[in-house]
Length: 71
Ligand SMILES: [Zn+2]
Image (cartoon, rainbow, N blue to C red; front, side, top):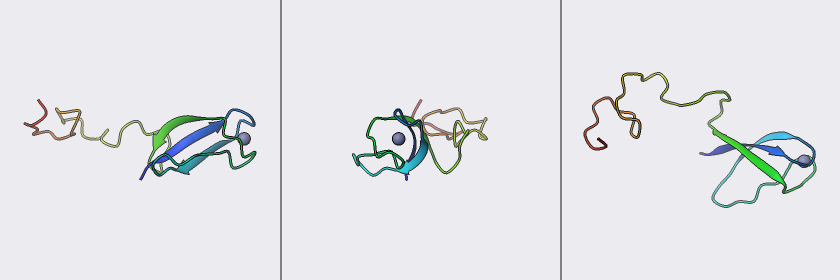
């Protein structure tokens, strides 16, 4: 499920929120809707890719080493 990191542009509060569809996100501190989406995370911050350990993967779109469908 998608967890997004937001920063409120009014009070500078950083927060994470689960977002389903086009659900409106507001700051939990000042209730402002003037927020910026930072990045998508999955319970972990600072991780660039979930497949970072599979360096032998030749396909970047499906992360499989023996990919024949995406090449
Ligand atoms: Zn705020």
